[in-house]
Image (cartoon, one colour):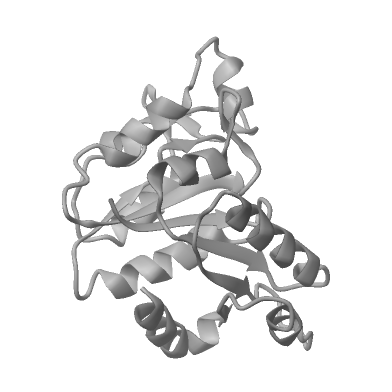
Amino acid sequence: MNGVFITGSNTEVGKTTVAIEIIKHLSKTRQVKVRKPVETNCELLGGGYIPKDAIALNEVSNSNESLNIVCPNRFALEASPEEASASIGKILSLDDLVQACNDQAGDSFILVEGAGGIYSPIAEKALNSDLAACLQLPVIIIVRDELGAVNQGLLAIEAVKKNNLEVLCLILNEINSNTLLNKESIAGYTDVPILPFSKDNLEFFYSEIERLI
């Protein structure tokens, strides 16, 4: 499989927001397919569960794939996929997610977005790190640019490397403007590329992502 695995240092760090911009840019020059193999906190509408993040990711890709391929496992409970699937008596296995990611992948560039942080449970007795290890894709870590980002970022990098995976880059998502020096601080402790992300400077972000990928 050719692509990247998007994870976070935690939940609510803006993984989908950043992933959308990566897909927008890469789709200009190559076919990009999205895999969000499981999503929770889905709204029940018209007899089906609506995965908001998977829909947003798929809409900016150029693959025109069915949502059933992009995100085949959807649950209503706002919890980890392991807990959400168990709440309805379903066993969601790591093999289910690996198969979902590989389904009709072909030679396209595949962007896989996990659920939560790198050590968040994503299937029965399986973490996001386990899924990334099975797929053997380089990992992009999203960290919210805030107080504590240095600790969160370095822990996430260590977790990815512990699973013998490549960290393509760490992205600092500046959700709220600040004057913190998180980029410089993290860079002092790792050789992983650190990219700032802000909607006010997307051209620089696009050029750096293109260079790394």
